[in-house]
Length: 230
Image (cartoon, rainbow, N blue to C red):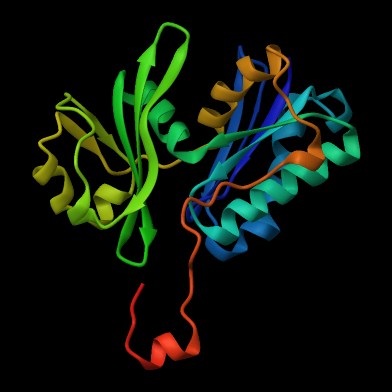
């Protein structure tokens, strides 16, 4: 089975072409240029794999949470490619992709995935690795770093740029280890999505949706004038 996965939920843009045996992955710090760079990277990944869009079996994307603009870009590109080629889609939670990347990098089985949500907040979810894949233990949620408490005593391996944005967070939680450099990436998304495609869980392209977790990203004029802060 051949798929392409895309993610732009953080400042990093990544694309991966994978068949479950080999993966061709690209990642670059694209920031606001993600919308311009994603399709060229998809083309590059397909060219290096020797595949055409028509030869794919599905498109996976980082569904969120993360950058509101970034997750809409990934969702929109995945939807557009899938519609054009009549392919199913799978949206993968970005916090789950963090856990998968932590498993690949460190062999971690119990992961507290934490991403910088900006606005002095973090996105968090707890994942447990089991024989048939990952199980969500708690979350996803958005909260202030000082309000975060472990879902159970652990041990937990902390992963994600939330720990880089708030360095004091790891010490306060007593985590077994932390890797703040891990971000959601398309290779992790492909690894999670492939079994779902094989199981027939792909959705029609029209049903591709982002996952926001946080609903409010701006204040009204009255709220700003009153000194309200998000």
